[in-house]
Length: 570
Image 1 (cartoon, rainbow, N blue to C red):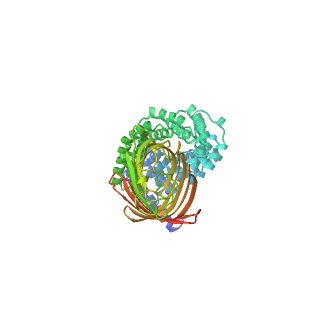
Image 2: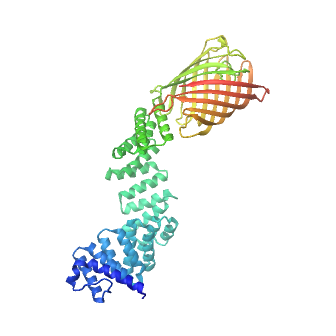
Image 3: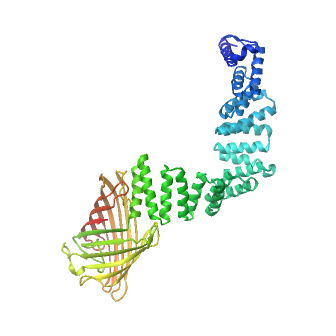
């Protein structure tokens, strides 16, 4: 042994003597600094550690065994220290000591090796050290060839993220090799390794485990697997069963709430979200989920109040601007009952295929519309909106009002789908001028936009707009019209609430009435200046003005036109 190694050994023995401290004199030995302990002194130190352990003073015995193990390199000393660590509930220290045992396991007989390896597997799992847990169980399985050790090795492989390895290990054992709790664990492990790739099969395995050993955590996992397999009602049954035994479990209650949302039971889901919020009042995410549940349940006042609570939390927690604005938009739309717009447009070359109907694209005109959404007729993004509108055209090629074209309309729009802007409407047209109509108008319309609203966090963003409608007037003055317009551009933020949007647009229109049929197809570039305003801490912008200028080329006639439009929306 080198002088350096001897010096290191003497230092460690000195620390051992110091650990024995007050009991050294009673044992009849004293160690001076730098002197080697004799075999008798080593035996006395080990005996003293055993005495301390027998007196229930394991925490005092543990460092003696660890120091002896460090200096002498004996696996048995580390094993005694590990047993003390396990007894005191110190799994981290137990793993450290057991790791030293495993490194020296050839000093032990087979029984001692298996005890140390299995202990390492259990203690490392308790500590969250999945890799060492796998090493312990893998060596134990190789040494014993026992199905139980192979099963534990499969579990450790799964916990360490090695799903393929875990499946391979499970294939090495058969359910007939287990009984009782171990059989339940076998089915449980089969379920766990399949839950991501085959949730339906995983749920079947978990059901078998529950039939043998019914545990609430297994029922919770079973519910999650059923939910992932597309069986929300069965999942809900499991979540309810768990909550009956553990009503304070917020994870299970949240899972139940989301499952209820999945089957459209939004009112009950909102109630469960509320119970979680009572325990976690500062959780903005759960409160927002409750707000959407209220909204989808048609409880708009409760939804708006919940969204306002989300805004308060996000502002206090420094939420990002985009998220805050989106939630403010929810409050604004939930509280909105009326809306409308006023517009005026000018086109230097007028063409009209509208048969006396409002047409702000192909001809110069002025008009307005006001809408009212009654609570009794509209809920959760679908229902009936009542409207009234009026408009009139201009003299061809000028901005002088054509009084003979004055038209009023009163009607109702039905929106059957929550998330699709598709409407069916019926409207009574009332003539104000000689060229206007007194008829019934039926219309079907569809619209879709991307980037229509203000985005507080972006310097620029995509803008796409698609609109199409079919209009029909029955009777003696029968009329049929079809119209479609597409816009594609990009918005550029110029100031708070202000954007400039260059875009290209294409317009297709067809009409057929008593005078014959007409069609046109126009396209060209345009630019829009938009200004959003009227907002506060809880509401997104409620008003907006758009000024558009377009150059349109007619692909049928070869003509072109300049179009200008101002729209005030509220």
